[in-house]
Image 1 (cartoon, rainbow, N blue to C red):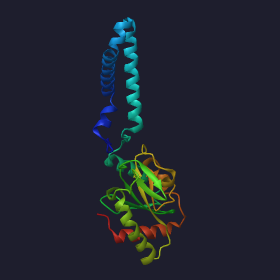
Image 2 (image 1 turned 135 degrees about the vertical axis):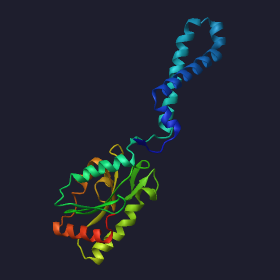
Image 3 (image 1 turned 90 degrees about the horizontal axis):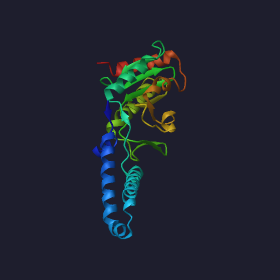
Length: 237
């Protein structure tokens, strides 16, 4: 399995030994600060018996405060994600669940993206781990608040107009064509991107087979004609 992009500090702070070490360091520093700052009052007022309890309390409070500040304002770690190889294997397993007499699958790359031609349209499907937090702003996909990276979504976006021109304009096949980016199910995907009301939907891998079975229905003959046109346009290699 592979992780999405994150800093070395993010990775370190999620391990138990690093948390324990940080707690010890903060507790030690807070205890030393307490003794240094309040030595005068302790010695003059005779509060030796309160030194250790108060020092430990200050240390715990400092640790909790630092942890709260880090969670609120520190860099956000992304969840663990599947590597692309594992993700594509799982996407293939989802596509194998589709009925072969109603769904026709043709590779448009080596071996991805793939075209899924079925009774609910043509889907150009690619499987790639999300490069960051996915958002949905004004009907557009956003990754970390910015336009999605070309290497993540570019192949599907590039293929869509070619496939539509081939099927609609040149072959006169009345069938809807949409794009799908498949991500790990651990990735949080906004509802607007999962429901397919955008040009390119983002779908968790465990929902792929269900997603391609929704859409404007067409006949099996129409789906087969779309498959044949794509196979002739870009033969499998």
